[in-house]
Length: 294
Image (cartoon, rainbow, N blue to C red; front, side):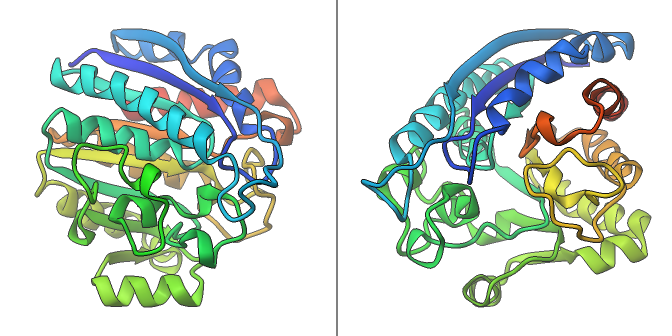
């Protein structure tokens, strides 16, 4: 089993409000490394490589805190590239969704051919001109370098675009705006919808695993907004959506992480303040991650 690097990106720069920057510390405080070690994983914690608390940015209302987002992605990318080049795995603790750009950029720098299983309630395929100022709603658009993206963010990787559309699979996505739906259609991006995942999680997980197995490097961004907030309140967004149960998400992550091609998981949009009982919530979340990656 390869060494697992924990990389913290304690930033909410691309978010709608503060909160996610507190997640890496909460994961550690409640024993994530110990849970992983108890499942036989050898872990190296590289600490937090970026730190930024969200604030309004009136100078760039359509792409707020752009420079902080870009810097965090570059720092994450550097650590991910080092780990993957050394044949090690990564667990990146966000932070908001833009952190995944750093994970992908790092894997690209290491020369990996990436397949991205994007587990999220939202498609994140907006560009700044179709968004509302929060860059974490634009992450996939910047990965694909959709026209209208910020050049400095779409260019954090040595490869531009960072990914081609056939390298992305959406899993359990539901909230898709009309411009995003058009982009998914025009670029023929693979989609496993929320409805499909909820109706048959085993078949959906098998389909995602089969798709990911065609690549040299399978990366999984896991946005906890995909979870039912009533079932497991931990996400930044408090929508009462009929999302995945934690156990269903655990099943999918375990199936994907078991692939020989799996190299990294990025967990984002965790807001510790939204947990009614932080200790209990992170005990479940850390145990789930340890089971999936152990």
